[in-house]
Length: 160
Image (tube, rainbow, N blue to C red; front, side):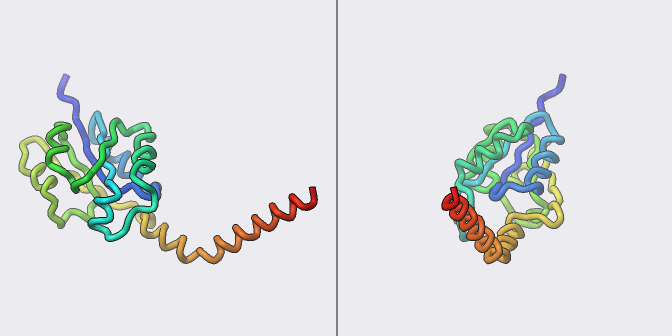
């Protein structure tokens, strides 16, 4: 029997959505073991200029709860060569938007015999940014509906 194929992917995984699930499923399908690096709040803030909505501990727990994920590790450096070596990673998957950007870990993987980088297409029409924009655009409606529910609950208690 051949060597177990270890696949590594990483991300923010904020406001978990079907696009995230697609990345995880595609990544898992490429090997026998899926390791997922979840970016720390500090790393995200350092390159996006803003903290994620969901704190690291919660994002890591959510990702770890998905049955196809074998291990979750903190990501403090984008695609860290040391992590790739530590877990003897065979395949790194990453979104296609990184295809023409340089990351030391991706370059290192491409230079190693028998190892590869697989760029995955984004799920059309869904992203954490689009969800945030939709929430912002709907903020007034969300607040009005919440106030109406609170008023209904309060009125219901008075009549009891």
